[in-house]
Image 1 (cartoon, rainbow, N blue to C red):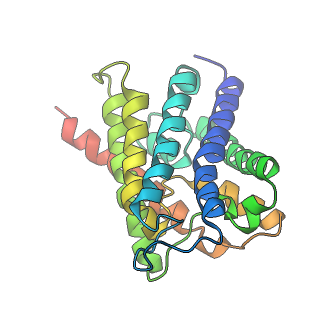
Image 2: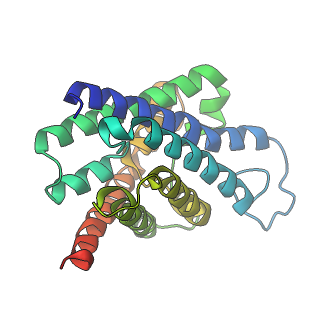
Length: 246
């Protein structure tokens, strides 16, 4: 097993890449659509397509980068790249407390770094128009609804992770592809509810850099993306373990 330092570096880089390309895709969708009227005002969506087309594109960006990170760094750190995954594995006694804290710190730093690098790459439009792809509940969605959406989305994500990556009987070679596509599918369906974060670090990075660079202050929504993903992941681990127990 790699040293904790190397594993944390892998988690930092992996989470930075996830935020740069995934949240960055959401920001670019808004930038591209800026000033362009929706083709159908009845379609309320993130960008110019005004509906699932935008979320499919964003979901596929996340799917591809997550698959790439898992195949690149999975053998080093397990490629959690998500505090909810790390907490769930700790809660089920698969991970030590010390490693959990170190991983989460690395993931949060990675999320912020990925968001900062995207802002530096694109310029202030990434902040003022794209919001760095920050997640927030959409109009008409209440706080409780947003948390529920995050719980459900992360539940299916963590269940899949257990089945294709954690379980000793998991088929080899498919984890990155299946986990990435699961995230892409969840984002496509639930993105227009609360942004479909599923990952506290993915939301933390854009929130922090938006705040530091004069963008929107969305911290009031941050508990959604702490409670929802962690609750969904922890529930999934214990449900999975119960179902597969002899």
